[in-house]
Length: 188
Image 1 (tube, rainbow, N blue to C red):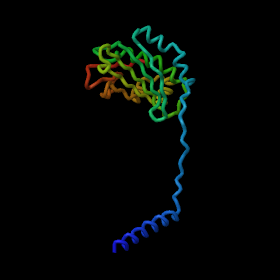
Image 2: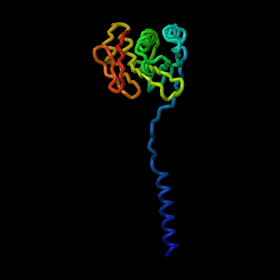
Image 3: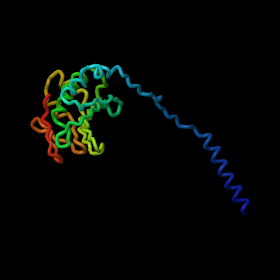
Image 4: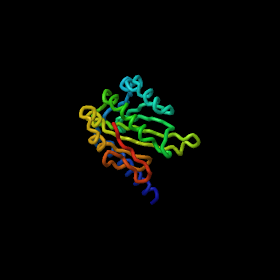
């Protein structure tokens, strides 16, 4: 009896295997994988410009990090400083960074739906985990429009600004925080 069950199971397994090999396989069309290459020459205008030098004249602790572009997250530009207002990024510094960067970003050719992310981080001497971060995200097209029309209000309404994890609200020319005693009057 056991031999019969065993032979029957082997027969079912073998017939299942042969049946699966005779089935037509579904053809899946896949795109070939491409490796994104960062073209440094696209960002050389920022590095060759007086951007860092001009900001350092205002804030001698200012450091400019490398630019990174990824097709999904967009262009990331990192800035570091020790200048702070109650431990938070100094609003005048944010304005100066934007004033210097926006014309340069207008000259860089990026895909139309790219978002430009500017990160301004205030470093703390004693503990790097106590630093605060101002995150600014601007659609690339909004920068192009701003350079032509000089409409600060239209640009500000398209900006996403976060101080740490708190999204800042824009009203009457200023970004204000609900968590921090901090106000950034946008002046471009």
